[in-house]
Image (cartoon, rainbow, N blue to C red; front, side, top):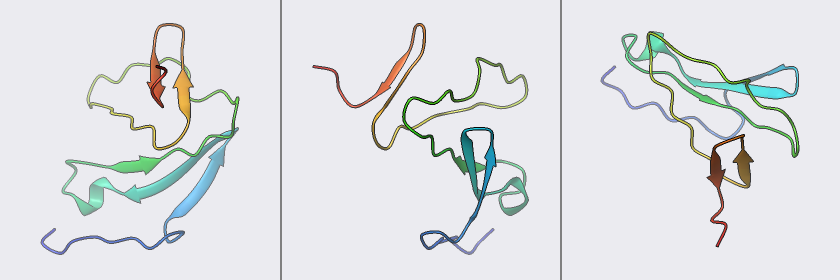
Length: 80
């Protein structure tokens, strides 16, 4: 894990699980099981992952463009 990992655009694998895309960017096998990074490209007005809980890991989401809404959550562009 001493060498930095750099991915060129389109270099990682993209699979689709229904309307949700999953791009595997960095796996636990590359970080000693400490971290994994995935991108979830979502088409407009699509349903992302259903409400769920993780018991053995933390999950963080970053909205890079647009917005995502839920019953009691909002993330994305500022709604001034």
